[in-house]
Length: 135
Image (spheres, rainbow, N blue to C red):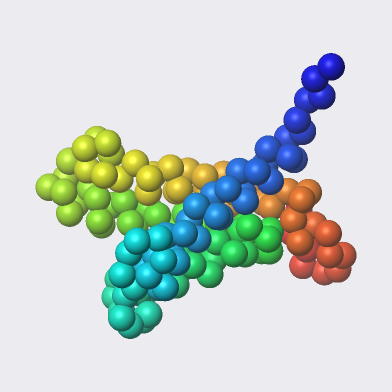
């Protein structure tokens, strides 16, 4: 007999998977992991700042801490990444598959979803009682 997977479970899987995938991009930029040379100055513009965003914020997403706020920031981050580094930098090529922006759009959509839905039941914010808890 097949038990249905709950909406909360799939929500947590999406949140954790997106966080882990994005964290790897930050680890590449800041620490030189996964076959990429690390950026010399963590506060350099734009790669160092993007590395900080992509390394530390996904940890909060994975844990489910202040997910709506973090997802709001990441949605904006990836909207900027797409328009600045893919659309305009590639002679305004419309199709994301051609301008290389499909991953930026996918992350933008995932974090837009998390911004609107919150962190879900399987998150630290949900497990810790008290004021300011996100639902």
